[in-house]
Amino acid sequence: MKKSFIALAILAASGVASAQSNVTLYGLVDAYVGSQKINGLTQSGVNLASPAGGSGGGLNTSRFGFKGSEDLGGGLKANFVLEAGFDPSTGVANNYTSPYTGKTDSAIFGRQSWVGLSGGFGEVRLGKMWTPYDEVKGSGAAAFDANIFAPAGNVWASNGYNDRPGNSVYYATPSFGGVTAAAMYSLGENKTATPTGTVSAGKIGAVNIAYAGGPVGAALSYQTEKATGSTIATKFTQVNASYDFGVVKLLGALGRVKDGLNPYGLAVSKSTEYQIGLDVPVSSAVTLSGGYAHSKDTQYAGGSDITRKGYGLAGLYALSKRTNLYAGVQDSKQNAYALTGENKIRIYALGVRHTF
Image (cartoon, rainbow, N blue to C red):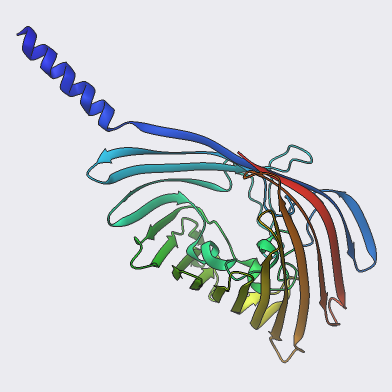
């Protein structure tokens, strides 16, 4: 009896041990001092509000979060992520307001909040997470795809996509010789009844396929969004590519938006976009990156086309594996248009980023 009890206790203890979980606190703090000139009006400060809405660091939005996994045995794991954004210049939550949709994300874990399973089959997530379109969108961008330095930052209409919708189901495949794919669908829970009928729920779907092997990187992504009650879906398509020659890395991307809004809130039937750039490792600690971006909108109802262009240049100095100094400039211009006129934006900044 006593031996049986001891054996059962050992088995129970070993079962607990085999299902040990781990939780990690992680984050990033990014702050800069800078100056931006918008159509002749100059503003200076720490983590200035972006012309595209919201405020964050120069390279990345500051955030902290919790992530963890539990080994369930047989190669199966349970995973979760809870992540919140904030502005270190004020300490407040980074409640980003999209200039394209007017939507404000003020959730506690507004960046990510999901739980899922992973194994030999790939990974499944349920909750709020980055879309597959977002996961690869910046892979061909110069100036480190930085918040304020990326050449396409104030130029591309495709920046108006919904990057992390909630109420989503996500699946990513394992890697097959460097090839991966992912798909996500955000289910609409916002169907409403009206005196004349039912308003259809909004929905978002996205997919990507990517390859990474040796010096080559490439990705194709697609996202479609339909607002609640809308009969028209906005469609985003983008191709990103890179090739690392060692002494320099070549970057490029092509994009298209159909039935969307441009960065100044004007409805357009189609926007075509491209950007090119270079990453240049000057030393083991210093990297320079710069590029050029262009976008052209085709207006509805016979309106005139609108073109935008911009460049971005940034330098990154690694003080350690977790701390970087950076500096850069971004300049963009939209040609004159009756409703908005000519728009010019120039940004200079110097900052520091620390990860933990």
